[in-house]
Image 1 (cartoon, rainbow, N blue to C red):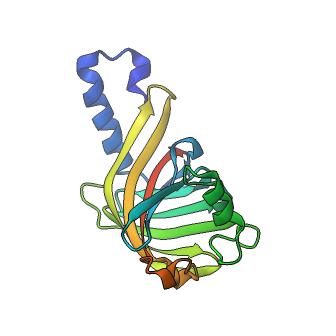
Image 2 (cartoon, rainbow, N blue to C red):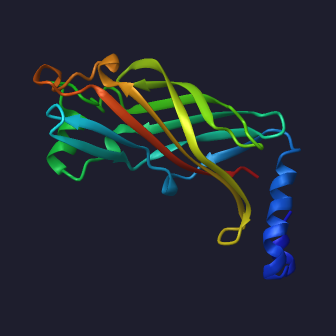
Length: 203
């Protein structure tokens, strides 16, 4: 359905979009490919036991979202290139990727991190949580995410493509993944994870 292509007036364009989105709810599962230009997982971690918070993001990601709004089911699969980490500090980027003493990401040995989960808690066709597993530094552990926002847009005017996007957050203990740098100096091991994702429907 592409109301925008048929010259719908501004007053009716919003109604048309709503009707189109409603049509998705009655469809079978739909696959979306993650848009790497609009998907940059972020994280926050302690520095010096509360002196400051270090923030970083990953610049390269890939993956898929499968959504069946009518059945209230779906999955999320995100693969992260850990060598693309960006702290805003070149020396720290280098250490995070290549250091083995102490180890952080060790990108040559563990080039990717991956999060795979099942969408749940649907309200009005939109998921509110993800139950899944994070694989990081060669270790896989359960990590749950809360979805703060989720929206699908049909025939996005700029691209004429269907797009879904979400903002999800969660926490994990990095020591569980063998990343204990700073622990003996009082660094807190909890990491806040923010997965901001946009994905384009596969035709």
